[in-house]
Length: 409
Image (cartoon, rainbow, N blue to C red; front, side, top):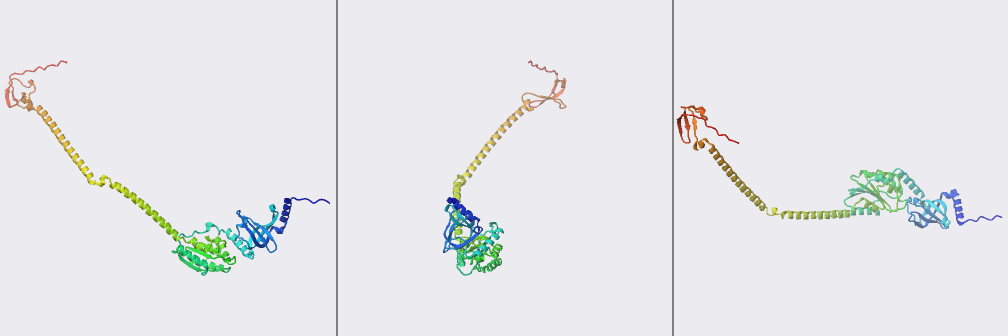
């Protein structure tokens, strides 16, 4: 009889893992149980145990699938986990590698939620580029919620505290159960009849998945998209997620958070305005101080402190210029007078009377011609001689030519 093959621990574990992988049923199995020992690792993976009154099963839900969960698992919650049965080799422990997790008894609602979420996401209704910005300072806000309950009180109190300038229009809206969807659609359609509306709040407090099912309606989702103003969804608690949250222009974790999102903080704005006022006043004070200092420097200048001194200086300069002009004019006139005297003296010396006065005379013939040469007269010619003083009539006795002296170089 042959001896049995001896496996190593690793070989046997891999063998068992391979057998499990070949089983068609274990490749896609759904297991119902209660969560215990739940751990949400920093890696994003979720580790927990499913148990009933007889047995327990280790499970793991990896991060890529965990981020799609519509709720946060916790100990004590009954769920249905769907996935593949496998073996974790390091521990030699069989486990369920879960791909989906839904609350027990709510499977149909969760499946419908997931199908609608994928459909609307593929249509682009969840895209941020489609969503509209909220008004900075809304003057009229519509509030779509039940007129009774904590949500309407919390929202109105928050709006009144943060931004009392806004006019809030309450539109009573059913917000519980599957039958709430038609009422929510009607309220969203009524927004078109409200004049001056700038934003709308769709809110309700927390509740079970069945109570929030009205917000997971396709009709409600498309009514939110078609609303004439931006819609803020504040539905349930922070961990509650609905289709309305995905399509809303802004998602708030709670009804109070929705009011905070749409209403600016009046106190913060007043603080900002006050800080701006103080900054502006300080800048003006500094500028005024600088202008006063510059004005003081200008006023301290002599020309502005004693302007009459500037005029006195110009008056003195004018007197000096006048005196200089007068002196120059007198000297000019004196010089011209002296030149005139000299010219007169020169002219007097060259005048015929002066020449005649020095002993010269002029002979003139009876016809008035001046005798310049002895050849003009003959002996016996009558002539008139002009003297320095008086005239003389003469008869030429004899003429002769005067010899000219030669000048030798």
